[in-house]
Amino acid sequence: MNKEQLEQCIDAYGTDIYAFCSRITCNRQEADDLYQDTFLKAVELGEKIDDTNNPKSYLVSIAMRIWKNKKRKFAWRNRIAESMTLVEETIREEDINHSEVMCSPEEQILDWELKAQVRQAVEKLDEKYRMSVYLYYTMEFSIEQIAEIMKLPKGTVKSRLHKARKLLKQELEVVLNETGK
Amino acid sequence: MKQENKLDEILKQALSPDEKPNDWLNQNILRRVKENKKMTKRTKHRIPAAAMVAALTLCLGSATVFAAWKYLTPDEVAEVFEDKGLMKAFQSEGAITMNESQVCGDFKITLLGMVSGKNLSQNVSETNGSIEIDGEMTLEDDKTYIVTAIERVNASENAGDGNWDEAGALDLTVSPLVKGLTPWEFNIYTMEGGCMTVVENDIEYRITECDNIEMFADKGVYLSVTDGVPSADAYQYDEATGEITRNESYEGVNALFNLPIDVSKADAKAAEQFLKEMEEKRNSNDAGEEQDMEEEGLAAELFEEMENWTLEELNSRAEYMEDLTQVLIPDEDGNITAKSFEIEEEGMKVGEVTISPSFYFEGKQPGESVTTEIIGDEGRYYIANYTMNEDGTFTLRIYRYSVKES
Image (cartoon, rainbow over all chains, first blue to last red; front, side):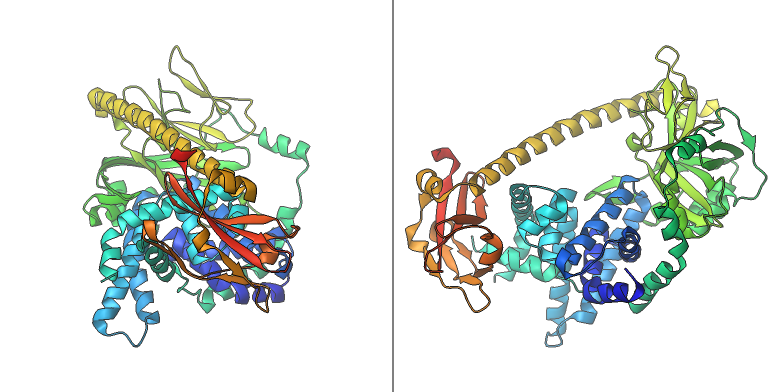
């Protein structure tokens, strides 16, 4: 992949890959690192990336692999603790920037709080469920694509998503009831 | 269950991408690719196996050399991480400063210092000693921090931080080991371990954190640096004496230092309690994991099975919900859209769904069918099945399958 191809790749998939990195790392600094490492690894692997080989899922697979390896090297607990705080700040800051102008300040606060609650609930899920949720809802991959990325049978992906939804429904019961009012 | 759809909607909203990489980040990738071109070439160049073995067997065994002071001191390393609490702890009288190196394979590993105590790290004290791990609040109190410096023996070709990462130093595991406890069962992973690394001037500095190991001082404590988890390949464990030694024939990194901890710091009672709790935790984790795997295995198996049922099998094994049947005509893009419908008994509303038959029916003939979605709770499932018709339309059928009925 030459410089021009890399630039095209970043233009086309950068936002999605960055969003995925942000979700799985829960930390802006880690997300930045993972995002850069993902593209650097893709360049190093030298595979031709074009529309015929589903670049988005290819890049996501690389990001997942790097993140898993990094996590395997066991986390610095304090950094995890710090991350948790950062996440909240990050969510708020970003949601403020991207929030709908039409909302009243009260509605905006409710919206940020809702998003923060949902994201935190997802972050609490076990890794195997959390990853499926991000691939499905953030990256909007189909069950088939997730199965391919995670090297799992489709049934397992479905089962994980089903279980994740069930756990989230329990965790977000209050939120779900409130938003229904 | 209208909540099902609401949950889906909320998840989509809350998790949809709204962060963007900034331009600087993208420019940085392009810059690093340019700078690392040399590195990329080298990683593609394979070292002959014989040369690799020769390099790895250079491990100097028990030969310990004392390094000249060219490294950052432990408190300076803590300062790099902006951890003033830890920096002060390393400057205190209780800290042990060392300067002992071992060369193993491609790496020279230097033990720089250690300190133990309660809430030493600034980050911990800022959160009142309470941090969240896996969704649970945990008390982070009595810890040991060990500082090591790891550098490549032939570092001239390995300049650059990114390159250092690629060189694999971060794949090394720094772990305390205790005499009398098997290294592969008792190590950094079972001692609530963590680490933080930084590369300065091609030297990787690492602060390794774990539960306070001073309680084992009377037994004898080691520090191992190895590739992966401390294993029976890398280290020998003498069942009779509890002595741990390096396996001289190990073709990898397996450094082993003695940690000079003051024996008076030993606490046999605390050590016994610690080991008891560790054992309990391990047993409960094993049981929980087994149960999870079993549950997941069963669910996955069932999904897999249902997914592969033919139309005939569906008709014989599940209940056909005829009222919900829809005949769908492909749009100009070839996609079909099923209208929203309700499963009244569950109070469940299934939203409008568009699927691409060319994807699901690739290689299939008219008359054949595919299951695209299975939803429901344990015990009762709803199966969405599409059949390709001779006239180019598709029929969506919904089936109810109850596990108890089978």
